[in-house]
Image 1: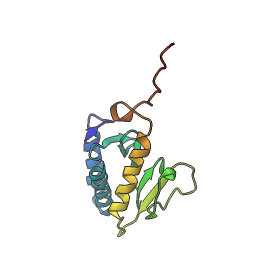
Image 2: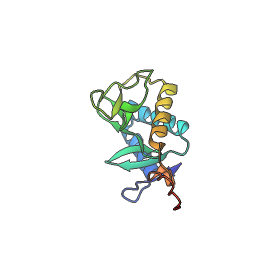
Image 3: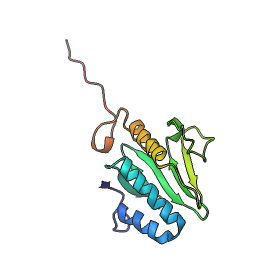
Image 4: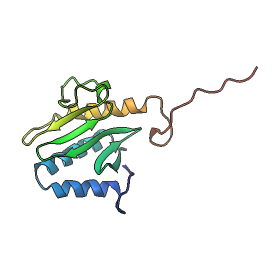
Length: 146
């Protein structure tokens, strides 16, 4: 697993672990479980710390993980383009691009369905990209002059 987005001298994975530990309740457990599911689905996921929030990326952002008083929110910036047969998305449904999953105390998410969303997000991010972590769009080959 790669790391990116160091803040205050700490690597992103350490900041994410610290955030999970600071929560110290069901929200930390939930965010930790979702992190593990993401890591299992995409072993080479890049963990970043942006906007004071955990971010998981591969060829672009897969999702962010925010913890609020009553919910843990996983936001997929390109979620509107993903198929969601298990109907995990339950928030930010009106927009043209993003979708989110709000998890409340006592709720369990279908791990396999969540991992399928994560893999779809990676595939969507990776379409037409090359380079380290998919950075940069691929260019068509130049035609030879005749």
